[in-house]
Image (cartoon, rainbow, N blue to C red; front, top):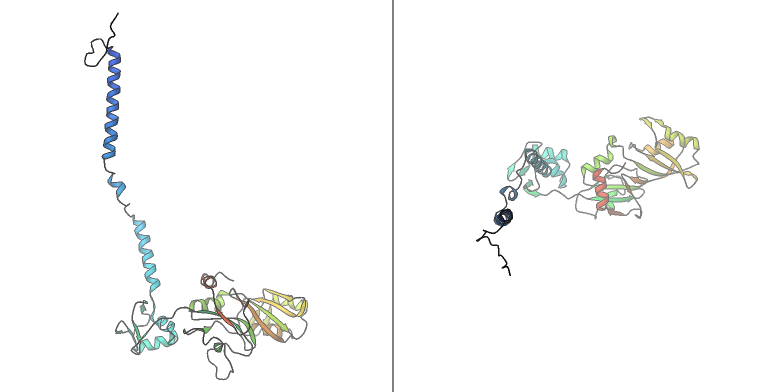
Length: 310
């Protein structure tokens, strides 16, 4: 019997040359791959992966702008700070500043336009004052009361109905006649007041008008086309009968001139027997009895601040 030949790498005399070369190359590659994997697992992560990305000029610029915006929001004019504290109006606050009655962080300030933050210590006549929080109250105004802070000739003012509502100094936004009822906002937020009352903003108001006699269809159409009054043209956006009663009219307007609704109907010879404002600046008197009040909800306040109303 022929002995089986054992081919080994030590004694490769009888090992085919081509096969030996192939095996050696294969073994070498395997070892190389294994060594490479071992080295890669032990090798630490590149420095570029560890460190945070270096901020670009644009990123730094945006961060600085945001930081500056926050700082500017925190700073308010000194006269506004004093007015918010319920001491006086802004104009009166400017007079107190000029007279040297205001101290900021222990120093008397006489320069108008000075800005302070809520962290500063502000004193008026040696007593520290604090800016008030913003308060928003909705009142369903009753008849026979005036929309002023104080009137010695009036029996009642709207402030009599909300005098125990809060400690902050609030005031009515806009005015309603003594005998006009309905939606009235009271607040100490000057920005909201300006948005709701300034003529350039043209905020929508809806009135329920009761009249002494039937209103003709042609007069309703003329209210929308425009009525020439002593102080200029006045027109309604919408004028319509309510519940098919020709003595009751729903009137939508954007003008805020004095007694505008009454004067528009008086132009045609009608007498307004009752006037009720049912909508103002996105607010209604729904579920609010006459003479009652409530605080605005967070949602209503957000809508007012965003101007999300007509």
